[in-house]
Image (cartoon, rainbow, N blue to C red; front, side, top):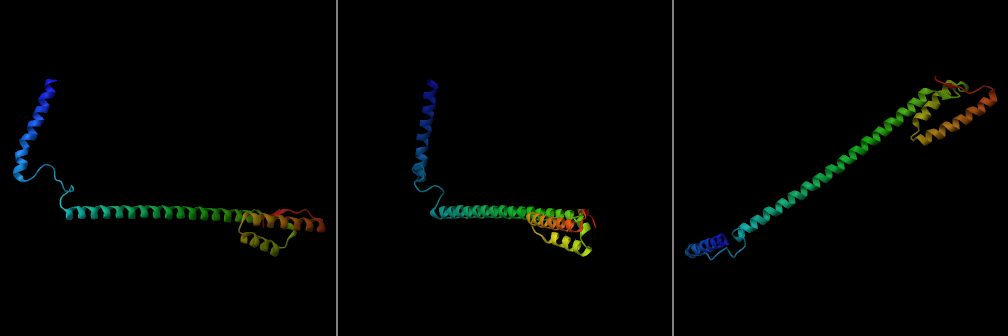
Length: 152
């Protein structure tokens, strides 16, 4: 307890000792005006803070725009990959043969391949192939020849 009284006494002595120094310099304790100096300095500080906030906003907007561009680029790449895959599938199907090709002329087979490659979606190709299969089955019955998948 005595140590505490000693510390409090020293603190009070320091406060009393600084009072004459403050009186000599014309100050009476902490400044009563706003912290940070003169009004001009405060305005300059406020301007700097406002400029920093504007810079932060601009940086955030740039990041947002960059993110949006990256997403668009990724979507474009995915779409291109899908198109490339679909084109490869069409070429593979056209290259693997034609159902009933033995019942078709060379010109009909060329036209078939061109039509398959011109189709845009898998659904269109499936429908086209179904119609073609029906036509070849009708031809098969008329000619009495079994339809064969040809590679030529």
